[in-house]
Length: 331
Image 1: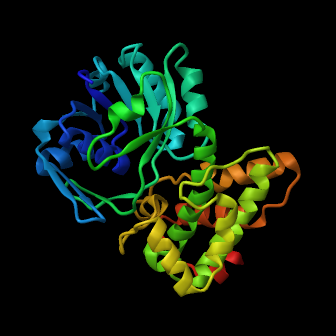
Image 2 (image 1 turned 90 degrees about the vertical axis):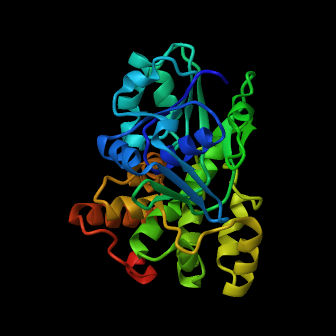
């Protein structure tokens, strides 16, 4: 892969993925906001992980800019912007990236691939799924706090295999739609973690929080199955079994979690970070998708509606996480 890999939107995920690719010797062109560009130029990139791994790169080891002309010769474009910014980034790609560049969506949500294909006619667009969290810790440090391999839609060129590098495994799938819906169901906990103001591992260690997550998952599964959607779990455990497992006693659940996922003690959801930094969240692309389908199908989704309302209230307040209890979220 001789041509550079473009990172379209270098937030936490974009900086970590781009940095890991650069650490493995790939050419990387990273488009970021001026604040992030200055942070990396001043400090370099420091990539750490829940497993104790660490990589350091000088700013000179990456093509770094807030000017999208850095995409003029990329061979692959990894889109890592928030869902609300997909259309705008598609227009940038259309203007600056070569027409033969492969576009891969590494975004939350289920509608981004369709939107990219609509706005980039004739271009090759692949879906993807990032199962892990990355937290921005300032001074150029980006910390991966959970485990899992990136999944990319299978293609004849073997894009997933060609992008896979040590420390950043990528695998191909023939069912990217199912994978993305499975991730959406799991990502319903993003909002719960954001509203809780406690680390993810400590949240999942408490049965009251897990029961709330189980009820949220069960509600979401009923709604999306009404659409004929069959989600693929991002863990070895089928999605339909997970609500029951979440309701298990703490000791049993902790043993199961340890065998399926590694979580850093300080890991938190990206939505928690959005509230902390007074940024717009992706609630409309998570619980909001569930309520939209429920409206169309004439179904009830009271828990999803309540969570959308609470997150939007927290956004409007601009004071970070409200630190709610499971009982307060249930209302």
